[in-house]
Image 1: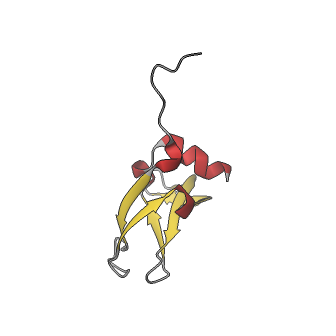
Image 2: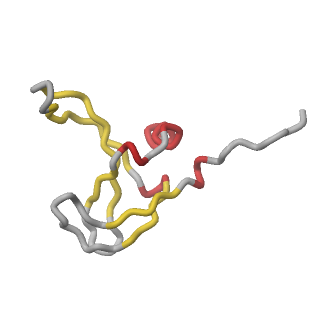
Length: 88
């Protein structure tokens, strides 16, 4: 078989993030996180529009500078990367 064009290696994916939350807590470090740094958790969150709890997926990392847990907006993570993280 001949390869015409190689597919993307999603294991090399990285995301640049700043260590802060919406309430500006965190040390402010600028970080580059990769698949190995991100953990996946499932839980519930309150949906204010519908007034009920719904299943949710959370993606987070631990800041190596201050040790705090920071959450990543799941919209910033491609679906292919989410699947790799969930399988670990």
